[in-house]
Image 1: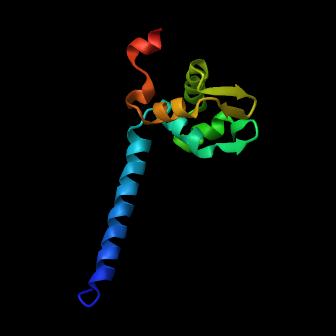
Image 2: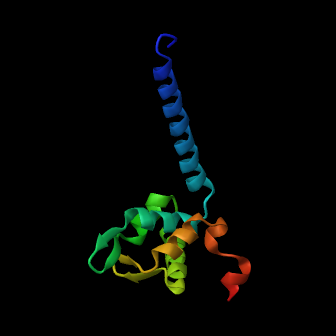
Length: 119
């Protein structure tokens, strides 16, 4: 390592970046709300089509992917549909407003506050 300081530096940068990505992944999946995790996962799974962004999945598959259960994911999808972020049909979820979905994926409490939820 002393003979190749540039290599040592590159290894250190790689390890730091890997550690950061791992911590960010666990933070998102352990401490993020179901709403955030659903929103994030939909964005990650979306496929561009002529008609827009499409996710083809079942609620149970989505729940397994984010570490939740189908009933909770169903409620999260209903909220997203009610806001206009997505449109649902059988085994298909169309992302209607990617910006709103990104906002919900990254905001505290998945974008929901007590006041807003009660409206």
